[in-house]
Image (tube, rainbow, N blue to C red):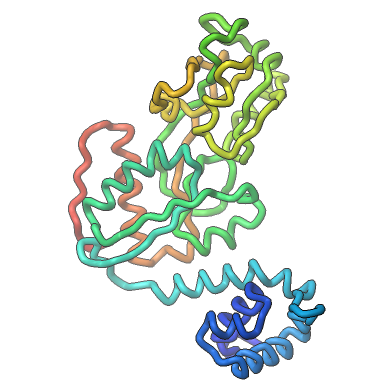
Length: 312
């Protein structure tokens, strides 16, 4: 069965059935009666030649195929929503719209806050939704990017997708203010002998690869999924932690740590907005790309940024 011959409403029903695992609740969720939802389930079972949901005791369980379809169906519905919401023109001064960006707390603090200010100034009806990028971002990047408006992430982790260049940063290290074995400078040997606090997602992979060229493998004692927790996990310990310099410069004096230059020429971070080609000709997304590029450029040429509302 090809897409043109399939009722796309069945995709919506499939998502509700797989996520609710209950015919009645699935029907209520999408505004169908129980008989209509049961009929949709019967059609889906014929299409997939699989039961999808099977009764086990007093509840339904998903079959192996049903489990495999949960995430795929959600992604397909999200993509269909975006396709059907596309517009030929976009007037930021008058329209209401929401953009969803996957990111780390680092990129939100360093870039996202200024992006939100500029967007609100130019387009008061536009909302930004920052969501934490998943740890498995490299496993099915195509499917993930097709359901959001973009991913804020430096080069060296994903490739093969269009990107808007934003700004550069570089790595520094955090050490406790009272670290007994660190003087005015860090040595390469310090990086090997002290335990690390590591941001445990793919973000620091290029930095880790560079250290491996010196024969150093970080001895990770603690890992976290938040850059902003690094100072608290370093203070009062012998641990060290790499952190992007722009974020380190924003740290309030909430934890007694020192910012140290690396004992080598660190590979720079080139931050970018990655996006799926499905958004190529969408007017709203084109406007978003222009705004992010302007904000990124302003970060390397500090001055007050003025964006005038206009046609995207």
